Each structure stands twice: as C-alpha cells, then as structure tokens.
Image (cartoon, rainbow, N blue to C red):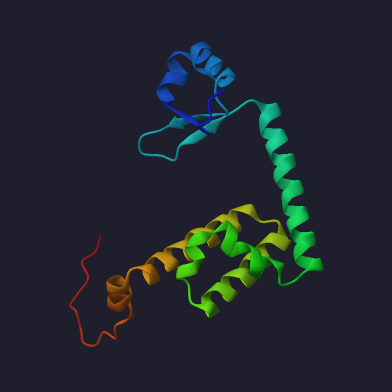
Length: 149
C-alpha cells in the first residue's frame, strides 16, 4: 500500500475502466477522482471509510474529554502540533485555541478544518512583515468603481 494518502486519477478513468481503476484501491488508501470544472471526489473501500470514521469519532471524543478535564491543555498543546502558531500574537493564539476547543467539543470536523485553514493564513500574514504592514495599513479615499465580475 502506498504511503501517499490518495492516488489521483481522472474521473473518466473510473467511467471507462471501472475494474482496473477500482483494483488500484488494493495498493493505495483511496483514489482521488479528479473532475474538471467540479470538486474532486474520493473513492475508498467502505470498510476503510467506516474504520476512519470510527477512529476520527474516537479521537474527537478523547480530545473533547481532555479539553473538559484540562481546559488549558489545548492552548499548551496546539503550538506543538501546529508550528505555524508561533507567528500569531499571543492574543491570536489564545483566540484560536478557544475557538478550536469549541469546535472540538462540538465534534465538527469541517468547522475545525476551516478554522485551522483561516488561522494558518493569519499566521502567514504575521510571518511576512511586508505583507502584514500592507494589510494593516489604514486606507483612506476612494479607489474607484469595482467592475462587476
């Protein structure tokens, strides 16, 4: 089995060569079905998907229990798991930790993923002094009409 999480194949490969395409699942964790003009799909054996769902459910429940029993744990542990947090201000890191704890308690993986993406981008801005300065500047005046897309 490949160490890569997904092998990418065009969606049409599944349509035109379904047997050969699905046989690849014995050598990889999952197949990413690449669709032009639409979101990609992931194909994996149902037993693997169920095992991953059960593991994630357990991991979220354990994390929620840790947060409940040791409320400050998330604030101490997240920077180890997410090294980019060192670029956040101390207030930003605390806000992120608090928000992450809330979505972890709720067991909302999609919200947790989106939250991590947004805060990682914030850290990227803080990590680049020129970009941070440009985005933090007070803009005044009218920059003109914005054309319709």
